[in-house]
Image (cartoon, rainbow, N blue to C red):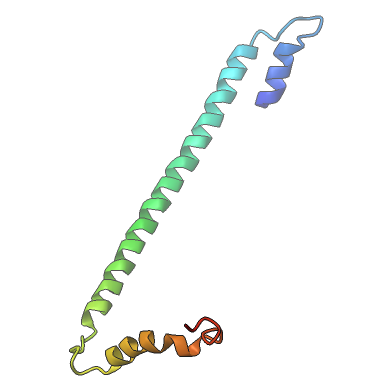
Length: 102
């Protein structure tokens, strides 16, 4: 019998009363359910550990790739000059700038 059926036989025992083995059946059903649950938990924990290891390896490989990229000197790159000028020219891009002029 499954857990619910055993429980119902204890709640509504009928004219004969509860089964003499109902409590043993209930205990066995509970033990079976908990062992199944524990096996699923163990499987999930093992899978999580495997995925964490895989993630750690991917992070390590990504870090190695990032470290292998050569860094250009700031004097050689002209990108910084464009970024500095873009802040000064930002008023020209605003269509409402004429409205707020002093």
